[in-house]
Image (cartoon, rainbow, N blue to C red; front, side):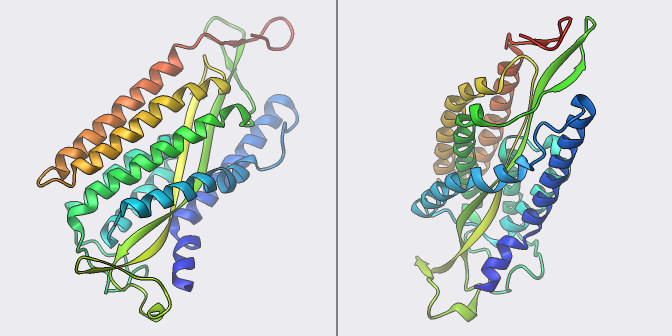
Length: 299
């Protein structure tokens, strides 16, 4: 039990994410004090969003994960940790709950021999290697669906404007949505990874393989710059993200058929790129501007 709890709370992904939101909150407060001579909100709103907003979607995603029987192996977990850490360190590149990083985690399908000492027992092997890509796509689908839920809550998101020099003189304000969310995700892991729990901890037999449960700290991220849109308008992104989630789930089922995992991975990456392009066009076509008149800001 301690190993399961320790994997979640002492996972490098969780610890680095805590550091990132602490730095993000500190920088926001310092920026508000420089621009407005006072912190608009001195509380660490980023930490509240991180722990609170992702819990509900994490619960729903975990139920769906268990119903679908999403299974990952130790190699996928290692790649997820490494790539997500890279995304967190380069936070400006951490886009839309790390969907692209989850897809790249499918590299475990091609590099099955990675081992991260200390996190897993040698009893964990990779008997479900053929299901790595479909599992990565299914988790990406859950992440997209969770993102759609987060966009629904954008009108209640507390943001402070940032000020910059306008192209034609004067100054203008914009909003920057830079938030991380913690989504605990329950996954199945092959092998008797925790032998000391044998006898009272639930294990599952699927075919000839044995599985146990692992809670993964899945990190959702939003990094959007709103020059021509207001935060409340981001609710319009809920539908395309939900549609992309359904398509990604379909690609996950496609990956279970014969030699199609590689094709489904490529199509999933293309879907993410198209979705990113759609978001960029959506943000660029807005008409709302925060421009400085003679006194103060107005629309």
